[in-house]
Image 1: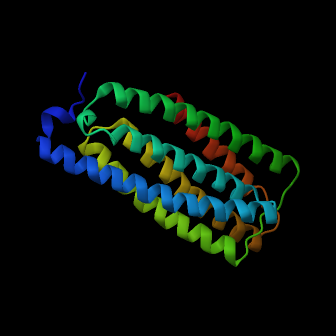
Image 2: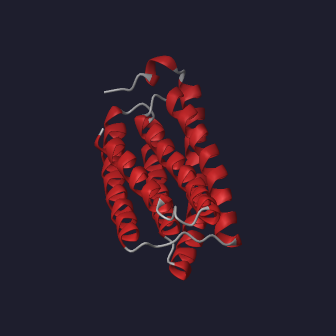
Length: 203
């Protein structure tokens, strides 16, 4: 079967958008890999739940972008509904795995009363990731709409989650700085994000 985009786009348009999708995926992989390594290092050094959740999400972002790369790697399969379906199934599984891990980690931190701490490094990683992931998400949503690709839109959603997690690290640390009784915000946002991802994954 073919996707709706096959009737809407001329062949050369479809190929041009396919190339853009490949570009976005490559940029996404490079950016998120760098962020994942940075966040993972911070998380190990600081025992930060948010950083770990963020590093984990960035790693999944790399995987989901790699799936989109595979989805569009074949020029003849731009409108292939089968490839689209395969990509969506794999993305769904990745989402479920990621949500389970994020929720378990967040609950563990809530149970152990882990306090949110943010230093300059984590701060800059969070701001950077928040901005970059959100920009990538918007581009993926736009391309996904044109190419009527659920896989691209799903990947965009994943980037958006990465952006939200970046900002949530800052938010929970700021709130904690002004009011030390609110130490649970980080973990709670983690649970919330995990549940959102799982709902999307199941869908």
